Image (cartoon, rainbow, N blue to C red; front, top):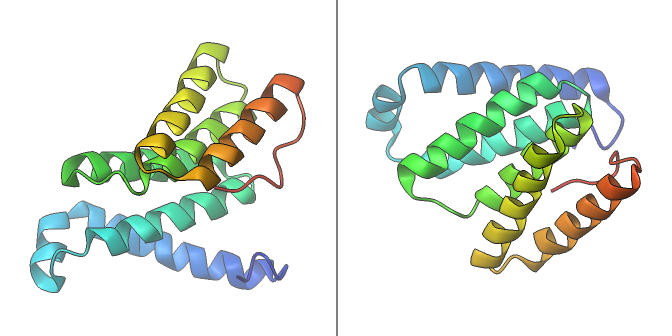
Amino acid sequence: MYNRLKQTDRANFYFKKVHAFIRNVLKDEKLYFNRVGDNYLRLLTMIFFTASYYNSVGQLTASEKLVAQGVNMCSQHHVTYFLPRLKFLAAKNAIEQKQDKAVIERLINEVFAFARINENQVIEVKAAALNTRYEKGESLVDLTP
């Protein structure tokens, strides 16, 4: 919310705190989950929104690492809900980092595949827009998962 309201200092402060919390939890997931219960969905939510924030401010490396951690957690816990949005962020990061065309196309195809599995038409439409803009070389600034 702070980022949308152009309160960058507050947004940066908030997401630094969230990112530090995520790092601490991921150091010892078992201890965290034993203490607070099996709250991996809460953690995935924090990972996704923090990765999205870092993408929006151009910190693509941090975003990419969080996306990878989120995808890994989805895999470990057999959760597909977050995968379309995480893969969308991965594709957007790859495009903005000017990665290989084959990598970008694979990621976009994964977005479509997971969106269809989850029947998430919103992400399908956004992925189509991402793909079109990528092919035309247009800006991705306003595209969010």
